[in-house]
Image (cartoon, rainbow, N blue to C red; front, top):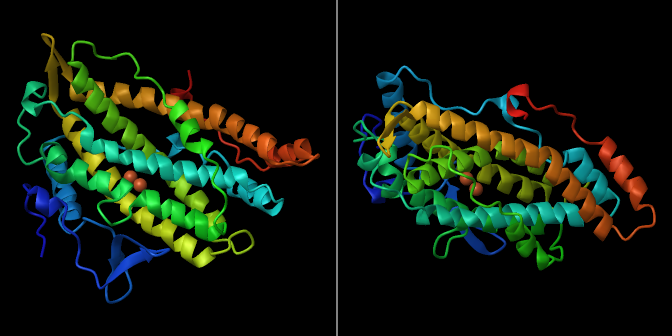
Length: 345
Ligand SMILES: [Fe+2]
Ligand SMILES: [Fe+2]
């Protein structure tokens, strides 16, 4: 049995699955994860990864006065379209916005494969203190690879990309997928921002910014999961409420290890000293500054850009004379939310 007192693991261990009785098969595609004899779902590659991350978290809390990095609940906006808005549109026969959202989520999950390409400079070249037997030391020894496989699939096994597409196709009975969606997602990708700590080597700040961004995306996804589960499990609007709702729950449980290893590695950075260009920085100062900038940008996108682009999709695809009435009703069903003052410019 995995033992939580260990702090060093091989890549093979961090990629090892909990033995399962039944694989997860969705729409004829073998996906990752599976079910034990009692029918409980087990996320992929968690046999050692989960106990390892718990052990690194305990070590951090034992050796540092800092708590684990956390994105507070009040920083997480509701999903950019509410469950009521989505259900209203589907009932009105305006299905394209929900089809698009689900397709875009699947595309973005597929981008998760890029995590394994992220260059990781030697840790000793920018972290002053020892990093032996930490989550940081294992980023390139299985943690990034496990994450990439979970999101984009691996070899013949589907991952989240395939699972979101399957949930969409089951709940909305194989809708037509507009071929422009992929190009539109690509066009929205934001250019690399200016370095906040130019004394650090660019690849160092890029690595930390990437981890902070992915952690924020994973945590913001909580409201996306709550939304998707609500909409796709509702028999009034979903053609496969049980199958699609279960799939969303499996994906959601697979995301927990991503949040936990990223916050652990960022906590380990926060507890250490970073150096570069003849300067030293407290890791906490760097992580906090990058996190604050990321949260401000993500909140702004959810509150402004995403609702505007959703109205645009409704106008372009509704093909109804009363589309402005539909939009007025849609707007009235939005979930009110105000960003905490510390995240607003
Ligand atoms: Fe995912
Ligand atoms: Fe994830």
